[in-house]
Image 1 (tube, rainbow over the protein chains, first blue to last red):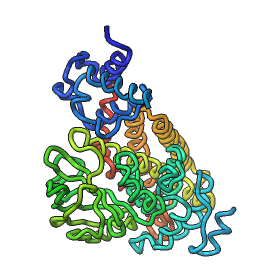
Image 2 (tube, each protein chain N blue to C red):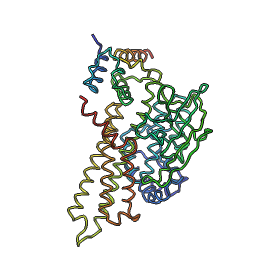
Image 3 (cartoon, one colour):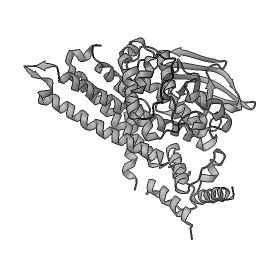
Image 4 (tube, rainbow over the protein chains, first blue to last red):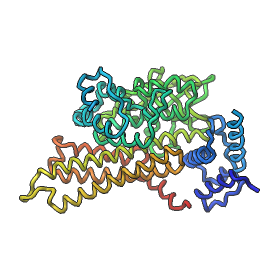
Length: 84
Length: 384
């Protein structure tokens, strides 16, 4: 059962590329849709929706390759913020 | 007005900070608009105005107070850039590229980079310029050939940039170059060995924006030159910087339409043709009504993009594309009509509309040409 963050991230990507059939585990870079413009929209969406700041050193391709990876990043950053 | 009183004391006196549209309008009417034709002919913005812009806190007011700014919101910044565009597109252009660099340092910089450059940029003590275009690469950024090669723990920069707004005067360049794996963004001081600035004069429009071509001959840079993440997200630095530039150009373009409207209304109210004032002629009325309508529409589009930026909403990206496309094309269309309303007088330097016409054409090319705008905006049609 996907968590809420996963559903929201997937919903955002699907809203941009409704024809792509993206799933939680799909490599979005292999689909050929990810431009720097979309990457910026995605980061802005995640920061606003989950009230997090993604530091430069977390802006790595592996953190954004799949919805699952992005959900994991959100969870880590939320946990770090809560612990601070 | 306080601004007027302070300004009469001379450029050495401190000016009150411009914090909103009304103050910006007064500043432009006092310090910029009366001399804009002179700047256009001179091909440069005089140092005293650059100083005044700094005294009024106009260079990068969106920076947080810790970096020397005032934390201004983007809606207000858009209103101010509209007013500056109403007075002089060359001045607004300098502020646009400076804002792009200052924003990049704020958004993507390390604490060390913010500390080194923040206050100097906020005060306009160091002016910034944005270096992307090359002789063989304009809209197609994938075609850039300037290279950034790792060297020791830093970088070695080689290549040429052109059409660099503010390049003649800037002290710090934000240079986009081809890195080992992707495009990288580098902060390059003008004083670095191997940097050569060649002025580009006599352009069609924004003639006082002090364009330059810049060569980087084996410029050796330390690791602190790299701005933002390397790797796949490096393109985001470029995208985010261009987004702010587009926003500023959109606002400035609305300012051009407003300037056209004011010039035409003034002229049509006094000039007679066939025994009637121009303002009473239906064909002239049609032109002015379209200006009135489009300036309001453009202003609302810019404000919407600004509100979305302030909210951190990703929808601001597309909203800014739409605002820039609408405002730039409206500016070009109405500036052409403004010349038409003025007749032969509009083709002379006796009226500002010829300058608006030349400047407006530039708006359809910079920060994404009309064609790139339409290609990008078309994607909106397929979003849910």
